[in-house]
Structures are given as C-alpha cells and as structure tokens.
Image (spheres, rainbow, N blue to C red):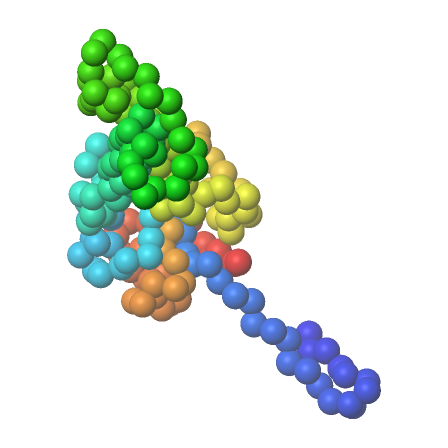
Length: 202
C-alpha cells in the first residue's frame, strides 16, 4: 500500500524490500555435491553450501581456494619468535651496549659460563612465545576471515533453513553475486535439482 505524505500532499511509493539472495534445498549429498559443481562452473562466486554433516571434497566442488588461516598462523609464529629473541637479547646484553638508552635494562647474569646472551638458554622462551602468538593469530585470523562473530544472518528467518543442523541440505546464492538475477538464478537452481526454492530477504 502506498503512503500519503499529508504535509506535501503527495503519494510516496513503498520501498522495495532488499534481498539477501535465494536458497534451495536438495534431497541428498550426491545431489548437492553435483549442484555445487554446477554452481562453480556457472561462475557464481558469492554462495555457500549448508549441511548437517561434513561433505568430503565439497570445498573442491565449490572451487574454494586454500585457507589463508595458515598464513595468519605463520605470521603469528614469526612475530612471537622475533619478540622472544629480541626481548631476551635486550634484557641480557643489548641494554648494556654503549650509546643505547638504559631503559628496561636487564641484569648481567652469567649462566653456565656462557656469554651474557647465548641462544641455548633463550630457546624455551622463544618456543613458548612462538606457540602462544601462533595460536592467537590462528583464532583471530579464522574469526576475521569468516566474519565472526555474527549475531544475525538473513537465512535464520527461514524455518526450513533452521533444519540444516538436523536433516536439510541447502545452497544459498547471494544477491550481491555479479551473476545473480532473481528469475534466472531461481531457474538455474531448479535445473540443478533444487526444491523448496525461496527468496531470502535481508
């Protein structure tokens, strides 16, 4: 229904609802696996597969690239190793070098007759910080790359989608996909075996 603006005495057209995309259900794992391959080959880039169980090989069927979490973990590990090395070097020997500020200075403790800094006694702390920061970077990178935490998702409004955690297999194609067209995408999902196809509002 149109809204009347009494102040300006004119009719205001109702706003068009915005859409997240289209979802479709599939009967079994082989069907959704084949549909995922066809979505990949069709050129869709903003879509996902939802299932109650892990599907072996689905990432390859979707054309997904390798995870970037490993790079986050590697960066965290190198950062922890570097910090541990420099921290111990500074506390043991670096702050004693002439010309450097005597800030956070350490103690000249000779350990087993070794120099003020020797790598042997630095290994435990280097190991601990490497593991600690790599773990933090892995968790943080995973959350950031997945856009988590996310407290709301448009698909949650669909009762049939909520059964994905039980016995439903769903493919959802987002409206922001460059190849998305409401009628054509719906027809495509029907052609690859989708059923109960629904338009998902934002």
